[in-house]
Image (cartoon, rainbow, N blue to C red):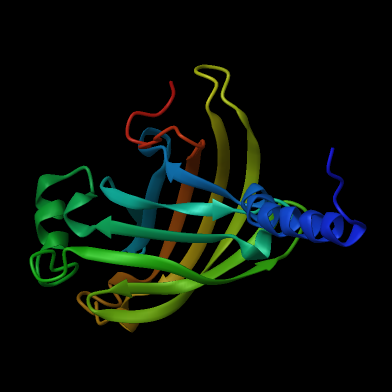
Length: 210
């Protein structure tokens, strides 16, 4: 029987350690697809001082990386289809999709891509990113709460859920129509359930859990 020299054993151990490092790094971060059934992108804007009108975006794609040990290493990238705007009223939908507001024919997408994350508490963080709307890119900060992570009781998929809020001025992006009668400040609320991508299993996020 041939025995390896101590130096050979050391080299082999180091090589195995180096090979294992990428796997360990991957284990620390988890990739998620949006469960579109249980993810809502909502906005609220002042209407003549009488009320807050609200709308939502129904069509979006993207996902996020969640590093539970080091949340500052997480990231999110989402593309929102502006034609998916829904105000629960056909006339409002038509007007907001037109050139006065979202101009969906010229700008079919808006995008948010995170650039930095600052942990603010045990389950909270400020996620700052670039929001591109109407061809203009500005920084926006989401105030995010991590609600829960765990296996879904129906189906067994691993889910992470978050709530987020933000404020922005639409005029910063060149959307000036109706200000100030229609509010400049827009309040954003996002509810997210993400389905973790499992190795060797494709998770589309299209159908979601009940």
